[in-house]
Each structure stands twice: as structure tokens, then as C-alpha cells.
Length: 300
Length: 125
Ligand SMILES: C[S@@+](CC[C@H](N)C(=O)[O-])C[C@H]1O[C@@H](n2cnc3c(N)ncnc32)[C@H](O)[C@@H]1O
Image (tube, rainbow over all chains, first blue to last red; front, top):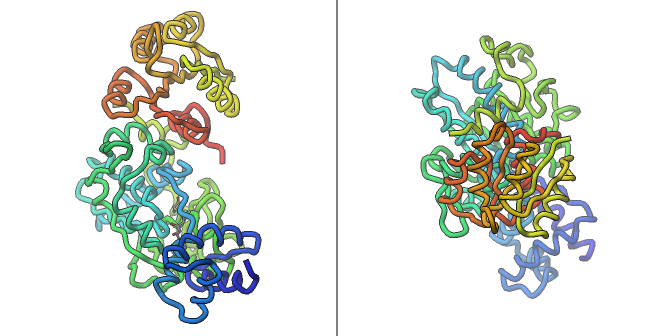
């Protein structure tokens, strides 16, 4: 690929989605964008760059941006964040929101839906305990294509085996040939919409919990910082942020403070660290993985 | 070191499973059918059993039912690993006391994630 063409895609992607692409990834541009050129009836990538320069079509740009997103995800990805959600965050918020009785959760880069649906399944399991509460799970992504997939909620055999306990598969999925369809009782708990993290977030409203996992890794420091600061603006003062395993706020923003014991968990900085510990369950709270597994994966 | 008994009539599957299990630090033992597995368990109970369904002599499900009746037979974690990939089989296996269920084909990721879920290995990051 010509350097000038690489530069064109590089700046287009950076402007539109924040994705930073280095020259050693130009093979990725070629393998993912050649099918887009074909779809648009263009003979080559080169003619696609010519078209982009001459008369940039918004729909073509959108296709390019979507084609370059990485949608890798799985149910209960990394286990721990979901354990933290269930054993640390929920008990605290159930206490703190006991008059309001409503909790809003945002999955800010939800890909094909496994992350918000995992949260929904956890909440479904606790249905009896949560009677009278309103939970809202808002899931957003920049890619319409992946959002459509998320809404369909039909997964391959491979996808339902990575991270999803067999008990959940039995309870919440129906089998159609080779694919596994998530039941409506879980699907209906999640609301999907398109949202670009580079945009103004005020229309999203205020949240108690934000999952923003495995998306900031693709961005530069400037965008990471700006996005985290905007998220801080949408998060209740005693709310919680979860980042991916390779992500951190350290050296990027001081709006959040990491919880030293729970990797990936952050609270807003002006809050005393004690807000993190549940007032009642602090000592009784189970702390090991096995407690999570035993309640999540209990035998029936 | 934890022990995992791999019960499968295919030598190829046993070999692949052994490589994955040794990677996650299990000592691996092999049995070619449910009867061999049963004999093995009489002399020593493994920590985990990776179990095929269809095998000559004694099937996986028959073995599991027998195993759960043995003294200490509830100790091993049993993970079915089979081409039977329909809900009926899954339900039957779980009712008979299986802990997890893998639908073939499997890979390292799937085995690792299932072993983490049932607490056989820790979730190191
Ligand atoms: C690797 S997935 C992460 C999925 C899930 N959060 C997880 O941790 O498994 C990253 C997602 O971020 C989305 N994404 C990339 N840039 C974005 C942006 N500027 N705004 C919103 N979503 C974006 C991609 O479309 C992709 O689905």
C-alpha cells in the first residue's frame, strides 16, 4: 500500500473512531478493506482511496470504520469483572439505592452483546432478591453491523462455550441447528443503540456502573483521557467504572482511582476509598473466586 | 499436581487433550472406554475426568452413573467432552452428575475456560 494511501486511512480512522493504526498494521487495512472495495464495486483498494479523495461518501466511510473495528469478546470475559460486579458492586449499590430502587448500567463498547447479556444473566439469577428493583442495561457500540448481531443474540457453538457456564446455556438458550438463541427474557433486559465514544455523552444520561472494556486499548492517550473524563461526567459520584485487563487510568486521568484489591475496578477520585466496601457485608463478603463460581455455577 | 483422567476411544483425541491438560499443569492419565476408567477409579480417584460419550464396552454416561455411586465417587469433577451437542444430551449428563459439558470440537481456550469455571484451575491474569 502506498504511504499516502495508508496516511489517508490512518487519519480517517483516527478522526472517525479514534482507532490508532501503525504502519506495521497496513496488512490489516488491506485484508479488511479489500472486501469493502469489492462491495462498492471498486476494482481495487487504490480506486477506493481515489474515490475517497474525490468524493467521500459517508456510507463508504462508515463501512470502512466498521470493517476496522475488532469485535473480539466472550461471555463472562475474564471472569473477575463479573465476579466484582456480583460480589462487590451490587451489594454496595443495593444498599445505597434502596430508596430509589433503580440502577443504570452502561456497556460502552458492547460488541456482539456477550458482555451486557452476561450482566443480564447475573441479574436474572438474582431475580427473587431484586424484586421491586429496576435495572437498566444500556449497551452501545460504534458499529451498526455488530449491534445488529448483538440484537439478534444468536451465537455459534464455539461462542457459547467460551466463558458461558453450561447451566446458563441450559437455562437461557434455545438450540436451532448449529446456533444457540438467547431467550427473550434475557434479550429484553438489554437496550442496544449506536454510540461513538468520541461524541458528546450528555444524551446518555447518568449511570451507576460503566463497563468500558477492551476498547481504550485501541486509542491514543489524548482520546483515552478525554473519554475517561467524559465518562466521569456521566457517572454518579459513588458509581463504578470497569476497564479491561490491559487498560488503566494511571497517567491518563486523575478523575478515577483504582481499587487496589479489585483489579479493573475504579471509583471517582473525590470519593473516599471507604465507599467501596459494603457497610454490612464487609467482613462476611466472600472474597475468593470459588464463592463466585459456587453461586454462579451452582448445581441445580 | 492434579490428575486428570481422559476417557476417549480415539487415540488422537486423547493425545490432543493430553497436550492441553499438561499445558495447564495437570498430570494426565488415559482410558479407552468407561470400563477402563471405572477400573482406574477403583484404585485411585483423579481430580478431574474428561469424558467422551460414545465408547465401546461402557459409555460415558454409564460410567458417570457408576462413578457417582462409588465411595469418594463424587470427588472428581467430570467434564463431558463429546460430539453429542444437543440439549437433551446436555440435560441428561448434568442430571447424572456432570460438572461441565464441552461440545466437540474443542480447543485450549474452551478447556481452560471450563476448568476455570468449575474451580479446577485458578484464573491467573
Ligand atoms: C474488543 S471489543 C470489546 C467488547 C467488550 N467490551 C469486551 O470487553 O469483551 C471493542 C468494541 O469497541 C467498539 N468500538 C471501537 N471504537 C469505538 C468508538 N469510537 N465508539 C464506540 N465503540 C467503539 C468496536 O466496534 C468493538 O465492538
